[in-house]
Image (cartoon, rainbow, N blue to C red; front, side, top):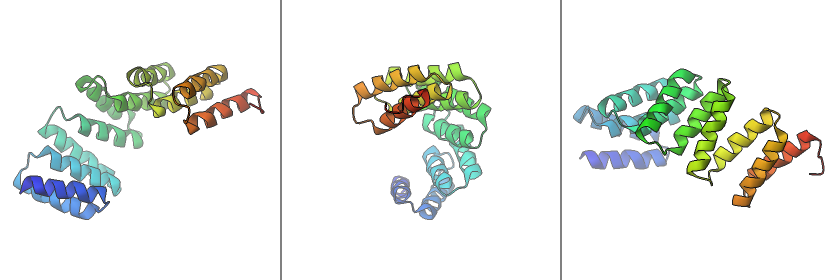
Length: 190
């Protein structure tokens, strides 16, 4: 029963038992070669166990089976980014945004790629897009604030982290980064 096998594979993934995930997914793929969920779960298990090329291959098969499978594009983009394959990762992030224009994680991925390739203004715009979609996204605040610090825009970073702390007073990492910006500016007491 295919749904039961996929449920068991998903549960095993959550329990970090990757070998049974792969076995169940292989069984499903043998019965239903176009089952994109099985390829996706298999890719997640392979990524978690360190087989990045195998994960990319399975995600490519999932996308071939379902061309609008945004989760597969996103996971493949994240893996490619981790492998410094920035052009391919950006293509996947762009595809996710094309499919789901309000996907915060895809904008974060775009920002990280643009930052890694030296496109600082584009990265800032990507991180700001995330904050426009969700003003409570801590990762976007950290990425953009750290980018300001790296660009030696310390006043901008301090003001930016002040804004983040107004929105979320228990945002510990924002306090740390704001303190770092103040320290770099010469305000040791601040």
